[in-house]
Amino acid sequence: MLFKEINFNYAWGFPQKGLLTGLDFRLKSSYNESINMVKITLKTLKNRVQKEIKKTDNLKELNAIFNKYLGKRGEITQILRSLEKLPKTKRVKVGRKANEIKNFLSIKLDQKAQEIKEKLKKETEEKEWIDITVPGKKPLLGYLHPLTQVRRKIEEIFQAMGFSVVEGPEIETEWYNFDALNIPKDHPARDLWDTFYLKNGLLLRTHTSPVQVRYMEKNNPPLRIIVPGSVFRHEATDPSHEFQLYQVEGLMVDKKVSVANFKAIIEEFFQRFFKKAVKSRLRPDFFPFTEPSFDVGISCLICQGKGCPTCKGTGFLEMAGAGMVHPAVFKNSGLNPKNWQGWAFGFGLERLAMMKYKINDIRLFRSGDLRFLNQF
Ligand code: FA5
Image (cartoon, rainbow, N blue to C red; front, side, top):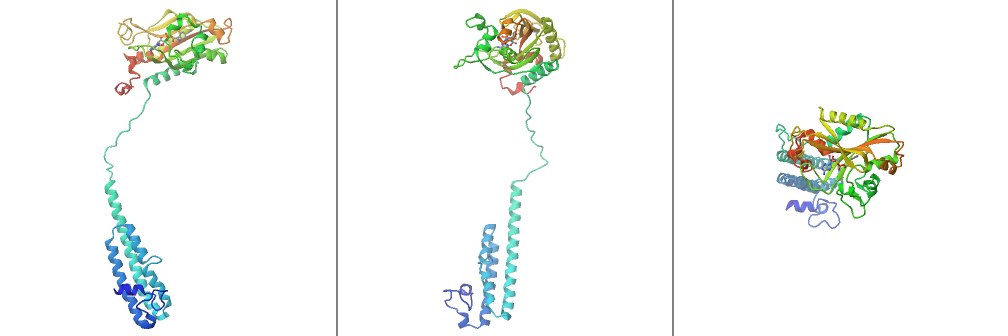
């Protein structure tokens, strides 16, 4: 009660407008009495603040206590301010006392803040405790798909033999995929390639051979290129057939290029790719864009040529189509066939990978089966 009254009037003798109710110290009390009252008020406040500090356990409340008593408009601050109006002798005495209390409470508030912070820190540490001695979880490392590894190896070998690596579009026109390669419309040879046609008249390229024409249109011979890339065929799948596959086209054009050059290059390639001597064979074949044409096979490394489902019991697996560039293709590419000779091939990249790693089913490559992929 005392605190309430005094607090209400701590303007003591110089009351604020409308504040003065019961105690007008200037009129009713002497300064001494007033000073005593202030001292009592301060003591009361001190006890009260201490109790409040003790009770609280969070920084927000603690801050509120500070503002309530020691902040700009805090009760103790106001008392201190009102001391200015006392005569100097009295002011010093009361002022010292008031300041002592103020400092004491400031320290208490600081200590409590520290205590709360420590407690919070401890709690967080307990919650977020990390045992640095526990063995770490090994992150899964990504690695290259076996077909990418094989493609890079093929590129490396051919680049070392002076070939450039070139790309072409997977969505093609009929002209580049067929006509320019000497496969006219309605010619039965088109049936060799089961084609996915798109609604806009374009198609998914069925082989990488269109890039021969695209490249020769823009680059003058002599030239040596390989063209790795995806091709698409509307085919049923089996252990050696996929409907989406990678091919690697090869093209060499110069003044005098022969089948002997082709054989030498291809055998060197097999040697470097398989890192051992591999039995290869060329058999006559037919492609409208090469003349003569042949298919390139190697002895099946899965069954060592004995015959298995992968090589369809023949002991050999067809790896590529090849031949000497047909004069019509040179013409369609803007080159005079009388001036140039060339050979071309088209490998199935999956088939090469199957032989290298002894994989007996081509469908495993795109199965997404990690038991398979983790082996490479
Ligand atoms: C062609 O695609 C010709 N463009 C190749 C060529 C290029 C001939 C240059 C002459 C000159 P072919 O359809 O045979 O040819 O395919 C070539 C190779 O691709 C085959 O030897 C085989 O290794 C691979 N291949 C073809 N179809 C599939 C398939 N469905 N699944 C997996 N590999 C295939």
